[in-house]
Length: 209
Image 1 (cartoon, rainbow, N blue to C red):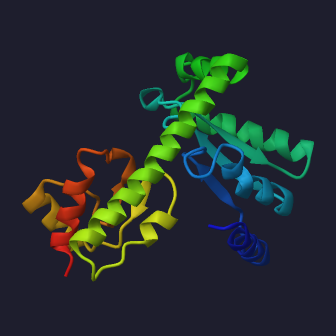
Image 2 (image 1 turned 90 degrees about the vertical axis):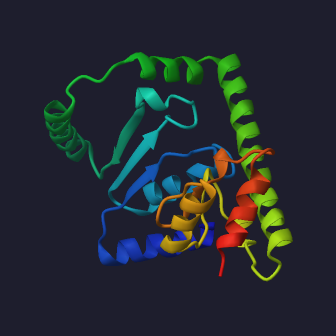
């Protein structure tokens, strides 16, 4: 969403008394670490209460460690203390004590200037590569099927794309071309590379009707 669209969302959330819960699992993969946090900052400023779940599984390649955090913005210290006590009860009954290995790795990277700079550079490289793959996919589909406009894929951001493919088309991709997407049509742009993007594009072109 654009900043203007986020403002509209915030307006509706406050008007209807909705308690917002934002999931930030791909920070840094859209426009950058700081830019991707825009919505979180605006919700924190505009809403009395806010829940934010943050994951480092993708941005720090720690998927197997399940590293993340739950941040809760409240209206007062007393409310924060009462909320924390309830969160601790939920944690205790779910996983009690998570492994600290992943959290220690994240802490080391974020608090060591050289490591953080290296991480931000590498994250930027991944972000740029994904954007390149979006353009390549659209160009290859356009060459195979000029009558279909997939330009919207370039406008989307992050590791995934909502392709607009139907469940039947996704099934054909799997059965006839061994290319996998979930039934909603969401595809993983991060899985594309210079060697397979043309194959994927041509397969998509063939299932379009």
